[in-house]
Length: 489
Image (cartoon, rainbow, N blue to C red; front, side):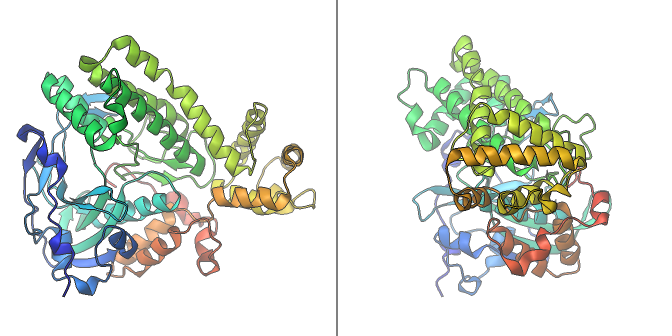
C-alpha cells in the first residue's frame, strides 16, 4: 500500500527560526475520530494519493492521534490588536503545524491541524475547535478558493464525539488546513513590541527569503516587504467587497502576511445588500462592518508598519501606507469592471456604480442573485426588465439606471454575448450563504456529512450553472434571518 501521507517528512521552514519563535508540542489525541470529509483534488495537488484507501491511519494522522514519521509539530507565538486593543501575547492556541509538502507546482505548503489541542499559547483554553466552526472554516476556505480569492485551503476535517464546552455542550472536530505560511501581522508585532529587534529582523529576512525574494535586493528590504504586503492586502479587500464577503474579526493577528483570507470565524456573505452589514454578533460597534473593511485593512497595515519601524525609515513607511487607497480603488474598479462585463473602466463609471449601490441599499436587494441576473438578463431587449426591476423598491429609478448601463455597454462596441460572458465569469451563482452552512452543520451533528460534501462540490465551481444544485442559488428562507454568528463560531 502506497501510504503517501505517512511519507510527509519535510521539516517545516518555520522550525529553522530560533527556538524562541515557537514551541514543539504534540497534538492531543481525540476519541473515536471519523474522517468527515477529504479534499481529494487538493490532496492530489499536494502530491498525496487522493484515494483515502491508499493511506493507513489517515484519520489518525489528520486528527493528530498519530504523528507523521519524523514530524516535530510546533506552534508559534505572536501578538496583535483585537478590536483595536493591543494584546501582548497570543499565538497558535489551538493550531499545530505538523508538516510541509511541496505541491505539484513546486510551492511548499504547510499543513496545520486546527483544533488539535492545547499549546503553550492556549491561554487556559482547551485548544479544541467545535464541529460547527470547523465545518464553516472548511467550507468557506474552499468556497473562497473556488471564487478565485486568495485564501488558506482545507485538506480534510475529522470529527469526534468527544464533548467540548462552549455556551453549551458541543463536539470536537479538527481541520487540516493548508497554506504556504500562516505567518500573520501579529508575528511581526510580537518581536517589535517585546523589544526583540533582532528577532524582528530575523523574521523579516526569513519571510523575504521564502515568500518575497524580489524584495531581497531592494535598498530597504523591509520597506519593499511592507509595500508588497500593502499591495496584496488591497487586492484581497477588493475581492472581498466584490462578492459581499465580511470577515467579522479583522484583527491584526488574523491578517496574513501573504494577503490570504485567514482564520474563518464569524464570517458571512451578505444576502440582501447593506453597506453597514455586520456579520459578527460580537462586533457591537460595527468595527468590522462590510463598508469598514478597507479602512480596517489600512489600520492593520499601519500596525504592521509600526512593527517594522525599527528596520525602516518612518517617512518611507508613511509614504508606502499612502499608496493603499489608490491600490485598493484600482483593484476595486477592476473587480466591478468585470462584474459589469465592461472591457475597460472610465471615471464616469464610478457614478454608474454609486447609483446602483444606492438602489441596492434601498431595497436590501440580494447581492449575489442581482449580479448574476444582471449578467444573464440585464442586456435583453425587453425594457423594462421585470425579472430584475422587481428586486427593487424604486422600480422606475432602476429602469433609468438600466438604461444608463445599456448605453454604457453599447458604447463599448462589444457584442451583448461578449459582455454577458465577461459578467457571468465574474459573478458567482453560488456562495456559502449562512443558512446553507447551517443546514450542513445540523446534518453533521446527526452524523451525516453528505450535505457538507455536496456543498463543497457545488462551491468548487461557483460560476457554472450546475442545475443539479439549483436549490443553493435560491433566495434564503425566512428562518435564515434569525441566524447569527459570533466570536464563539
